[in-house]
Length: 437
Image 1 (spheres, rainbow, N blue to C red):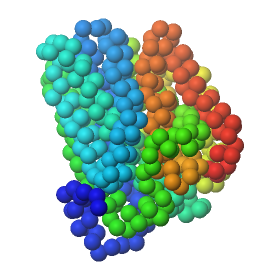
Image 2: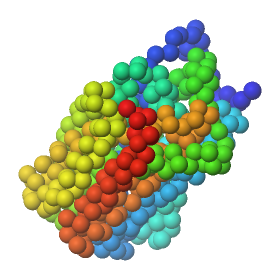
Image 3: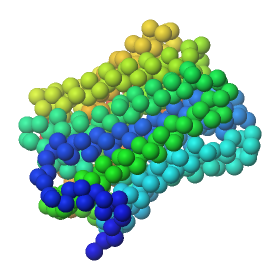
């Protein structure tokens, strides 16, 4: 008998009468959860460019301060697998509801704590250490926030609609970006620069905590009900020991981590990196570019939806390979558009988000069906952790470092490497490729 939190109790009470589980209901829970997580993600990412270099790394020049900020940004991706390790044990001992409650309060608490962060001018290097600690707290929490709903959705989707249901969780990413970008745009536009850097930037982190609480209850309302518990058990989506999963499924974990690298590398190349380049090396205002980013993310949502239709018609593997090839071509010339003025920036962002939507829409859990039932839940979580670590964690740092030293064209090299990894991973293991048709 596992412990039951008060939030779980309230969630169970709402559905005490029982109901039939439907894929659409699972999809709603997944989208809400993903949107809240990505809102947290983008609030931090935008602050990494506009705030932390001046608040926490004020001892360095703007470029170096931003590189330091991106190094701290990557810590969450390094810490994420450790979160999976810790919270898998919590899941096995106390249940999925307790694990999700603890993880999301840790995520919200770490995010809210950043809102109280003192600057370097106040506490010196202690400011850097606190930022790194809170960022690692976010990463550990993200590893624990894996609820298995995406895998459950994929397994319960109709045979001819798997691509459609696979893209639904991915909509949360551009939705989170749109809300975060518009919120920062409003604050920067309405507040004097001094007030924004003093206290205005802190407000989105409080909002992120509130959204996490709402998302927690929405997800608990699904995962703790008897109907879903039975469905998780029938699909064998239960946590397995991490060591056992790695020993048994290491090939699938590696291939699954590298298969979506094109879209995960592209993810930061059209979100975090271009904001840093425009802010550091052009005269454009951050509010204008954040608006471009929000509009482009809207096109990304449409492309994600289109990916569901295309995947069901032509196959997920085909779409992943074709989109990876398109991203490879994009990497050869598109980054230079960031240095071609407002029109070039808009073309880069709109084209990039369309390509991102087509690839990212089918990248999540693309190979989860390859795991044995016993290890699918834990294996999918590990695969996601490593895909984000290798594909996205260091992308802003690498792209900004390369472009600042060798020009914008060199930033495309990182993106090209991700596209090559995707194509090679799918080509080397055609059996895995057939598994996701």
